[in-house]
Structures are given as structure tokens and as C-alpha cells.
Length: 250
Ligand SMILES: [Zn+2]
Image 1 (cartoon, rainbow, N blue to C red):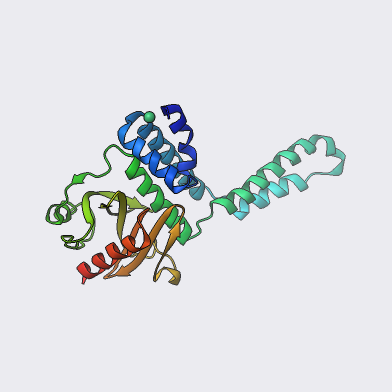
Image 2 (cartoon, protein in one colour; image 1 turned 30 degrees about the vertical axis):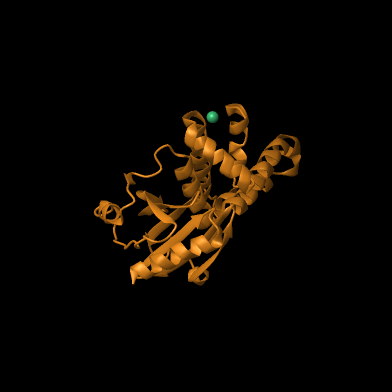
């Protein structure tokens, strides 16, 4: 396959709609081809920016009623002059209604989607981590002073798991740790944030596991921290890494 064919797959990949095997083939190409990797990164960054902008610019009810008033407040004798503005207002209202519905934060789903984007962006990046080390005694202290909390990493000797490294990441303006692990041919992200209620809204966040787009995930909170493990590794591997992280935090 040439680069153009790979790049045609990037939009579906960014939306998490590429089948797992095709996604892995594309990731392998992205690791080897910096041109396609930067195209993928641009697509993911754009997608994230659009979603965040959409969330910030939610029209208030006051604006909507002002638009409606403007449309209905004029007399019938001026039908022909206000008809075009009615049409324009209808378009605005449709955009507001559907736009808001589409971009409204959906709590858990939205958070998982943002984390999936961060995971995919790291895989597509030529520099996926800022501290590159398989040694937890190197990675953990690197975060000191960069994030407002500390965390513990497990001993991985005797497991199929390997620490790749870490970087600082952000979720709703809150800094956190993004760690990358290797499990056989799969890369798995671990995200750790302070559990301030912003990242994890509501009781449905108490803990859980499942599948989001192409990725298996597990999440829990402990000691005031919210952790997520996410990747295309088997659910059993995601569980094993989660168990090790939970045990290390005790
Ligand atoms: Zn390429």
C-alpha cells in the first residue's frame, strides 16, 4: 500500500471506526513513516480542538429566544422582507439545537473518547513519551514538580509487561500522568489524574471496565487519584496491568 492509501484511512482511524486489524496495520505504518504520522497527528489534534471548541461555545437559551423574538416580533405586512431572515434564523436555531445536542458533554463517554484520542495521538506521534525508560525508578521521579500529585508504579519483572515511558497530559485543564506500557505487540496507555470530580463525574465512575471504540479499558479511583488503563491489548492484559497498578498504590 502506498502512502496515499494509508492517508485515506486516517479519518476513519481518528474517529475510531477502523477495524482493529486495519488500525494495527496503519499504526505500524505510522511508526515507520513520519509523513503519514504527522498527517494522523494533525487529524487527531484537529478533531480534539473542534470538540473542545464545540463544548465551549454552547448557545444559551437567552440567545435562542432573542433570535425567535426577532423573527416573530415583526408585522405580517412585512412578510416578504422578513422571510429571508426567518429562514436564516431557522438555520441558526437548527444549528443551535443539533449542535448543542451533539457536543454536550456526555460524562463518561466523552471522557473515554478524549482518552482514546490521547492514546491514539501518542501511538501516532514520533515522540510518544517525554521520559523514555523501562525503569519505574526513573519515570516516577521525572513527574515530580510537573504534576500536582505522586503515584507508584509496579514491579513488572516476570510479566509480559514493559514500561515504555511517560509524559504530562491534560484533561479538562487538569494536568496528569500519561504512561505507556508494552504488552507483547500492543501498547497500552495508563492515565492518572487527581480525582477532583471534573474528570470523573457522577457515581457511574466508581469503577469499571469495558470497551470504548477499538480499545479495552479499565478505570478506578483510589487514594484521591483516578486511573484509566486503555489499549487494544486483550481484556485480560488490561486487567493484569490494572491489578498491578492497584497493588502498587497500596
Ligand atoms: Zn506513509
